[in-house]
Amino acid sequence: MTYASAVAYLYSLQKHGIKLGLETMTALVGRLGLPQSRYRTLHIAGTNGKGSTAAMTAAVLQAAGYRVGLYTSPHLVEFRERIRVNGDMIPEGDVARLAERLKGLCEPDLSPTFFECTTAMAFQHFADARVDVAVLEVGLGGRFDATNVVTPLAGAITTIALDHQEYLGTTLASIAFEKAGIIKPRMPVVVGRMTEDARRTIEQVASERAAPLSRLGRDFHVSGDTPERFSYSGRTTRYDDLSCALHGAHQLDNAACALALLEAAGPGGLVATEQAVREGLRGVSWEGRIEIVDRRPMLVLDGAHNPAAAIALSGYLRAFRLSHPGSRVVLVLGMMRDKDHRGFAEPLRDLVDEVVLTQADLSRSATVQQLHSALRDRWPRPHLQAVLSDALGQARRLAGPEDLICVTGSLMLIGDVKALFRGCGLSPLRG
Image (cartoon, rainbow, N blue to C red; front, side, top):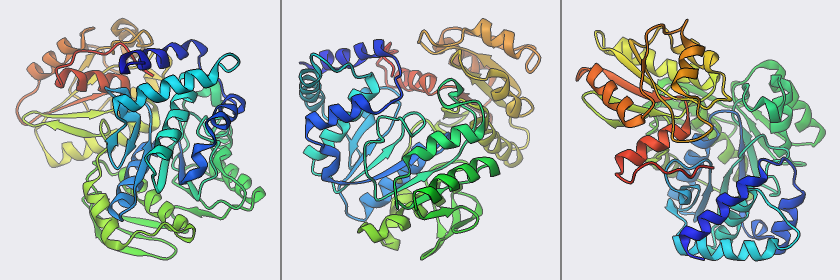
């Protein structure tokens, strides 16, 4: 296979949809020779924050001198973003070679999904690259997620909120139960900030599996107003005057979860010095999450796509307005059809001065007319621009040099923005 034909093959597997269950994945990694057993793993689940937590964890471990694999989803522009070793994307040649190998192993009786095949590719690439540790972000849920065939040193569950209810259940407790499925017997687990019913559900699963549990606010703590300067105290360590490169006060909780996860992994042999912690957090990069990509006017990209993530984004926008009196906020919003449009808009409705509705280059996107219909009582006079480049152009015309433009509502939309900026056009391929 060429790289292009390999990516086309992987996307052809989307015809199998989303299948929650581990039978196919277990068989596939078995045929590969269990590559995920050749290195240590850290496993991170959660409705929001799991990607940022994974990025911070990997950055600190790399600063500590480890060879680190990082598996995340979705990608923003290019498929290879999902699978990285020490920050470097998987080479095109390795994607082609591994896709061909996986295709042969699946025939004639296995029909993996796109995510199952991609996860198996990541496991094998990390083994081939001889990583010391792999940091794995759960794709969907946890209990039946394709990544859940690993036996980690430790795991984390960052947050619980309503999202993907058609797969995970309609209550916070049911979603928490699915995400608690990553907890293995006697595996240390770190739990972030969440409602009491979600926390109780996770604690019950941890108790049944004799898994030591550390909870934010009880066993580890974070203090500070912004990630630019904060303190962390855990079971065995304390760090003052830390600085994290990611924006938004919600990243304080994610940083705390990352540091607590590293503490929990310490007895398994993963050791990060204070210098590594400071260097890793200072240098961490995580695209599309309150990412500032331009100035005058400030242009912020954020892939928030559910109400809980919108609340986190609203905190950042509120802080901007307080620190920039007189500046205006222009929102460019595009979402998928199956998301809670009204719930997402509610935390943002009083923080923005102008709204431009648009859509990603994807069949799952809500049209601007659908968004307008759902949100007309929130924002009665939005600007409608179905073409993303036109939406960005309109936002720039509406904003002054001291204003802020925020593009949000979907990671797919953010990926299309970044593709435009890179001058490579809009990609129709999305996973």
